[in-house]
Length: 455
Image (cartoon, rainbow, N blue to C red; front, top):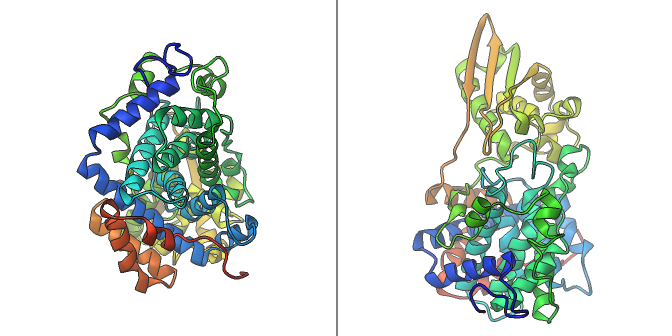
């Protein structure tokens, strides 16, 4: 495609064209070895999380049956189910500044497309690395906080349609023109209102990235079949940015989006605890306080929250006594109370039974909230003060989890153990580690989602 022009109409290049050109150029230049290694670690992490979820979550076990068509799932449905598996436990990776969960969206799209045949493991690594980069750039350029543009959207879902489309297109080895069409078709599906998170009593928040992964695969397959998506999908009069954010990108945002030498997604972290990432600095602070003060001395708990964190505290009565595990993981008050009582936050300890834990519910009733005005992108300050026995103690986050290969491998094995599949963990790790040198057959088998028997 000629630089600076759209091949189909000879007009100046749209933002969609420029974006695809930049990302394809980044791929041609070669993805750095460190980024490829990080990509494989995040693929391993999401594979392990999905394995734990599909073997243990009642919601996950029902998903294949929801989409069954003659015992075989269509590629887009495969992407949906695998993406849901990867996010249901709220344990998947996240870019704190962009506030997106990239790999749970992009890896399922890549693997669903790979099932069509012909893809190499290196194609999958390329797809996840570049589409994660796109997703993190889209989130970062809006600097999301608790208010303003982006605050009422699940950005992983809203931006995920485009990232998943790119991921599938790379694996399907589609050219730039068809990939641009796929972005246009992704735009025609984009959604992701955040009420499933702000509201309480449901569990659909656990699967919101799956809609994006499914939509992205649909977009890629439609484009591959010859459907031409709108080339001005991002920056046209009713394009994505004006429609969803009230304006087109300014020059600085545009330059950030189109960089061909950046790897923003390298700041994405692998979660140590299976709860909303914004709760993590509070979990960290609560663990330190529990060690210093002891839970039996606690009389009052004062939690400082900014605008972003406050959304995980409302409505307060329901957040103090959540009715679903998804609501509990999205509740800062509950997570603080749970951590002060139990210390360890893991798949083994944070379960449905926790919702009825009298000690946790009693601890939650001692919580008071103080809202501060400061709200910046990234994690909240997360200050907690405990009072008891005439003494007080304060600890503040944020908390940056370890991202070493050893830490990832420990989590990987623990997820397989949780699913009762510890004996398979080593082979699974080797399959992911060897992706750049081979095919995807072993990985596709590990991620099999067709129903094989009624749950």
